[in-house]
Length: 437
Image (cartoon, rainbow, N blue to C red; front, top):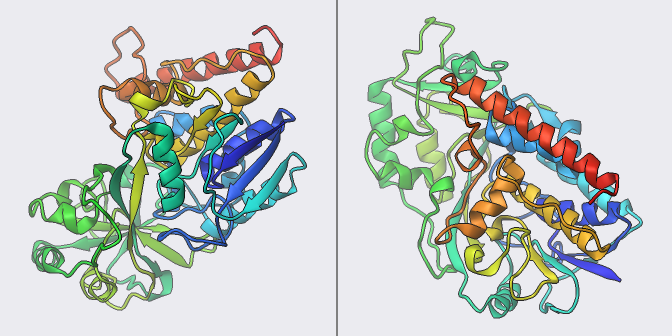
């Protein structure tokens, strides 16, 4: 018997790897390079599109805890990330191309995994299948998914940020710092005074955007909102979002005295490229060059990649999936990745990990691992499958069970939640490996 995994993004690769670890043969279906989505260009697996950051790495942060939980399951995503991480303060950021190459090589060399290149246009509900096609599934595959779900898919817009060369940045105007001095000062910060910000803001909200003829709907998902859409909500919106200046001390003044700050994060392992944090955009490329060159320090910036806009597709998880990412209607078909409603690279990978891990146990006649609200990796599927209506969700402590005791210090409280989670998962995994369940 072979399991079919559709999609070789982070979720699909995690699912395939977890199944293969259990000795189960997998056919991993990937349409690249035969066909590319509007946002993808790398023929390799696990391509990162809108950011190279896998978010915070400390366990007092929910996404940092999720990564620690995934490491307990021998996550292929986490192992690859450690091999190609780049400086990013307290965040785990990676060299995109190297990250993809590492995972692609490991998957292709695995004796239990065979790869089929080409678009999938059919799904057999009598065969064990994990649909991890991601939010940019092809139209033909989307049609198959809609038939399976008997529900119309929901479409949102997502966007990727521009990337500039480090050597083109004017370091007489920018400075290195980490917000609140957390971690190493790896971010490049571009400070505005009030007059500079107002000029930039006015040009941004009046800039021309690219047409979106290929999309049927114009909803914007709040978690990845284009910077020009955010700006259109008011002059001060960006000041409380990606351009907030607080906690960033300029070494030239010794103060956090900027009116607004654009942060740049390292995008490649050699440190030659930097992306504009929070600057996902649908502006025309010429407008991006014109407007973003108004950012102090980027007047002569060389843009090696402009921002792009693309569609995200979600299924109605509360109606369609159970807590194991398994279809309620077809018990051999699982979903994984952002198409389920988990939001973010790490969250998507974690859903693939759990779908593959539990499908392997079910095939082998064992009980699946029950999702538990004491963990982030368990809270995500429990949230997306029990919500009153579809609401994409990323890792956060709000969906994790509280401690049952009052701890005012937030860092201390989250550290205790993380300790509880990791202790529970270690015990559970050891119990399962010992054959007790």
